[in-house]
Image (cartoon, rainbow over all chains, first blue to last red):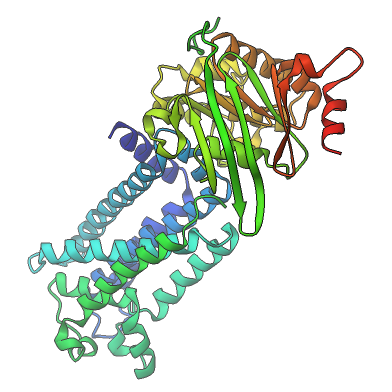
Length: 247
Length: 244
């Protein structure tokens, strides 16, 4: 336990010194929430609850997939993971420490974003907390799996490009900012299969929003959870299969 | 002697036992039925040309690479059952460092001292490897020799009973080499078993008690340096002949 705590602190200290990572996991989600919450540029169907659920989805995707994936990819290429694997920490405790640091960052993100949203007039009165926790856990597992699958197999530079490209693609057409109801039909069908759309919608439901039409006809409305659960199971399995500690 | 090093100065028992080690990568057999022993209080040099199987052999002994077959016992325990308790007694210096370019000297050494939890003081360790003036420098700002000594410091954080040092003097200047030599000497005086992989045969001749020479993955020499070398026959000549 002492080793896990020590290495979790080291992971967090490394993150705090990395300004690009802070931009990704804090500045961008906060910026999007404040900008789109203050300026009337989104369709009328995008309520503040929808915006909060989208920004929470973005923050989890940023931390669990992009930030963790990029950092892990570079650590692998510099043989840092291999070196740490030879210490008493070992590989299993290294993974636990990384997961713990992701969880701590997510808690900070969520508390900060909910506080800002509340100051903008959004209410937590309709939040179903157990559903929110469930959505966060499933989303974290899904996006960590995707991030580590890429980080564990690609060269560091290719991984960097892939993580950033995926982030932008999911942000644009993954049902995060623009609800899939608003996307063209064909794009909406594809978006519904993506983990970002499933997480955004499950967040929206958890925060007290109505299930959108695009999901309502899908597996009697529970499709969003099935979709997210599927990603949460499959992505980590794929990562475990593909991941190599040594670059 | 520095308190950075402990074990049992009188022990000369076997610290590493390699038997019939085979490491294959697909169709290529990198290490082929390698067997040798290494003892406490001695430096065993693993020598050979590029691709001879030195790093693969050492990484298997460190528990970082699963052997295809054979048995490996480190400090009396099977490497395949490597756990945190065994790892805490093993010092590892990787050929490729294993340090992120943004890592600073003292914070990372302090972190490794915490991970190994062997009572080593990070300041003492940084001073011992001659990096006391570079404590807040990042790895990317260090010279090649300073990077090697940074990596060596991480290995010493284990206060090791067996230390695997892969190319510890590569790119190190004359003063740095002297520091590395002194550290290796202190390690062996304390009873530590040092496994040294190097291409620098002059260095190996100076510090090693025992030499294991690999060629195309096989052991071609396994003998004491004192027996292999004479005033007219350097270790370099011996290795060159054996690996021709």
